[in-house]
Image (cartoon, rainbow, N blue to C red; front, side, top):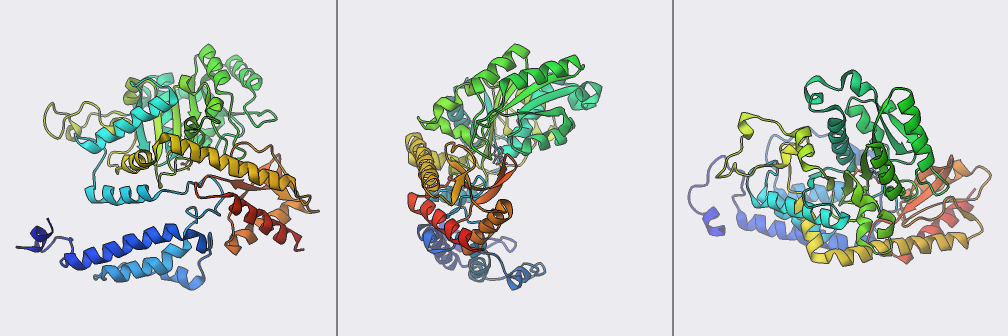
Length: 483
Ligand SMILES: *Cc1c(COP(=O)(O)O)cnc(C)c1O
């Protein structure tokens, strides 16, 4: 293959490198550098800010002339690589970010070479995505007739699920006529701890965020089922039309899991669509200690989850699973001449991924998920998830032993919310978190628990160990004692 590309008439317009040996050399160097980057990640700060002159570097005009690959790579190494968000680093504990895998990185390279368009047609990458869908069905106890789709993330997955639920409620007419007066009557329910992308999905779906009721949570930050029932009853009395309940499996603030069995029972009783936002929590089915908290997910009509959080697959790799495949297609499939299916040839295959969501052209996200799953296996991934929870428990125990610190929520799984005791606690703890991030030692984020500002450490990175959370607490104590 090499010699073939070097020989003969090289097409003038081709963008393939003329000097393949030089390219190969540079490519190997980049690969080695990235393996070293991950292997030595602890020697670097978690995060560091860009200074003004570096930012200026990103304001250059578009390049009219060629630049050697090695020079472009040098710019990457000096202006981009040191200044990323930091979630590969074991000291990164903010928000909900996975750490990535090296196998996933390689798969991204392989997928880049194939440059497969996974919107449709008859080829192996599409089969692989179906394979991944079958695996998710297996994990979640869904029938193999369910349909699934890789999307950017759970924000998009929740939106796709909402559009299918909306289609069920309003019928096929919604695609032509829009939501209309009947759509204006629809109401849905999620806990007040649900992720902010859920109300946003209602905005995009033309239902408006006011159609989504925020149901109060109990002491453990789980949706209060009695309040949920009351809200549905009140809406029916007022002439509204309840159609959907969104359960949360792993809330972003505290890691709470709604009682999915109870929600499923109520949804069935009321004839409502039952969707689960399992962005990170759904992967807990692979872990024996966590799986019981997901009981009831097998009864959901749809589940949104992310491979890029607890699943550690590199960004981005969100996923939506819909129980009723026919309804899933009914909500999205279109008939365009250029998308006509054939019985033979490249245009074969009855159902294509573009029948299941808004995207037509799509990359090959399934490959990095497949590599990560094949190389490690579900048992090891489940054990890794259990380990992140043990690291969080270690952190919570250390906090409980420090009189200057207090826990702000019962530690649930892998998320610990705490603060440094102080006269002006909100401002002081916000300062501590910013100082910590700037120090490069650790990067937790902040949130509010019952109105109080909390330092939030979420252990999602498979690389984070006891020593990393010890360093976090040491640094919080040091910074907290200042002023
Ligand atoms: C992260 C998260 C989301 C959003 O998912 P993205 O992949 O960031 O789009 C939604 N819900 C929950 C519970 C999350 O943790």
